[in-house]
Image 1 (cartoon, rainbow over the protein chains, first blue to last red):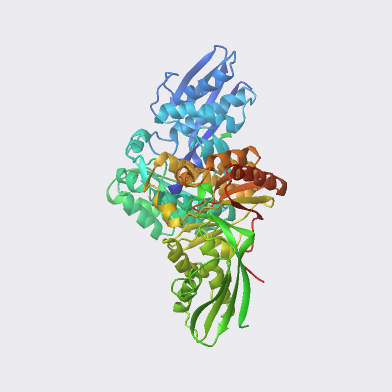
Image 2 (tube, rainbow over the protein chains, first blue to last red):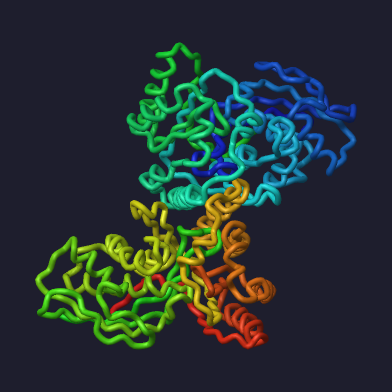
Length: 306
Length: 306
């Protein structure tokens, strides 16, 4: 095999109570990437569709990630990466993670899978670090492993796959403003009140329990973030209105996707997810703000070969 | 039935990564209480063995808890409570919780169980609040419900029962100094660094996952507390030495039980738990500090009628 085409999905990180540790993988929404083995050593960025991204391999997330892998696994051939970028950068649904994870996944396949999916996270992080300023795995892990993932330890990459309830559906709305992760991070406070931290870890513990027991009510009660959301939501137009109408429409919970501006809602079943999406649309239509809206199941498989 | 005798077990709260939310129930170690229905209305504290505790019903944790229950459920008869107090107050293994939970459990039985075990937590909290200055459920919940419990929301008492791996064994050593919860709490900082909070909730999420999957390795990695332990451990003689030798002896993890001074260790299997206990003893024998040591399984049933 000397070429491969893959689908690298979008993902939601943070997930309210799970700031910097929790994430889940989406289906349908994602980039397509084609990677060819070339005779000439080195990594080349070929065609880029959909978005303006740097072609310089030293500045492109995908090639940076692959290079970090090849630093550990030197190979005589080179690779040319074509990207059909469907996830908008700065939208908060793991655009750079999809590029970085997709590229290392594809090259790993072409190399005969020297690395496990978990090992690939490390290399993808080099790309993610370049894009967001901070190396973090909370989008990469669900993209590579599928489903819900918990990054227990970001430094030593202790990543755990979590189950997901069968009827869990996601609605994502992306109000078309762009937020850079690095900016959304810079407004956070370095210290937080202990009592809010306790609430947050109580909620995260309960959220994890709910995933194992398919307890939708508990899931709903634990989708709460008193630490990050109050600050970051200020950067998102009409956040409180969207959240209010989403919860009134029957969503299990609602929060900021990644560092925003996308807003995710979790619902039980497709019908509820659609009702929630219709409600979200009303808010942004009322202020003539353009948006994209996506509906998705939890993607249990992550990146796939197409 | 007009009298009942119960065993009200000790418990471990906080459990490293689960400060103020996580707890588990011990077996063998616990108080015995006998409660008799009396013709005279009101609550009377009868015989107290083992410890010096107030006989004034307005100052005894057990009667205060029962009174709060009877405020919601007025009853023509009264109750007399005899207590054989085997758990030492201030030892950090839920002494006041055993008294409060045991008393409301026993009276609820005599009343024909008008309240569920979960509902009893609320009434037991009145006693706990009197004893420790703060109403908290992280010891009461495991004593009443058994096993591991997570207090997602202490205010609205959203309490979740968690499973426990079959071979999980506990070793507890109580160096004989007394620490009041109220003092151990007062030395905590009101604000904590966000990055440590993230580690803590990553660990708690992983701990909960490990309980569901019987993953002893993950359990071991997630028994970590970078927030509370560094501060509270200063109040416990030779804490670092005990922890070091415990981990070297093969324990899965080690931490402060409740607000101390007791130290708990979790191990896989009885043999390991014993080895860990022997190691703990060495440290306190070396400085001639008296101690109690206990070995226990996770008590899945909580309070029992004897």
